[in-house]
Length: 122
Image 1: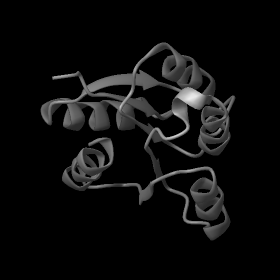
Image 2: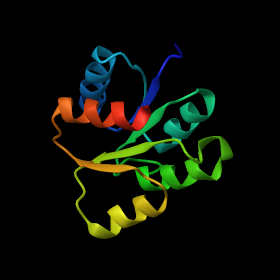
Image 3: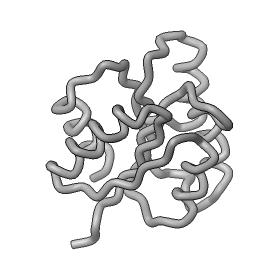
Image 4: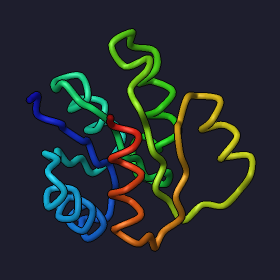
């Protein structure tokens, strides 16, 4: 069976560790990035099954990273889940327009996150 690799992009090390731990216990492999610039680099270097993106990050926001990710034909249909504290409808609409498949508000229950990732990554 092919390894399922999830890219977790968040400027909070604590959030990355929590999400990575939960996903690894569920059988996923996890690659972490601290901002959108690193995230794009890692996305282009790996065969991912999905990406989890924070919105507010230094250097390149999650929304900007998502839009740039979609410019690469390799990532046109890659499932992306936004994990953020943002609740602004305009941001949610922008993410949907760019192809985000879900929007979860922090703090999130890890079992709900794992369930969403399992569905989206299959």
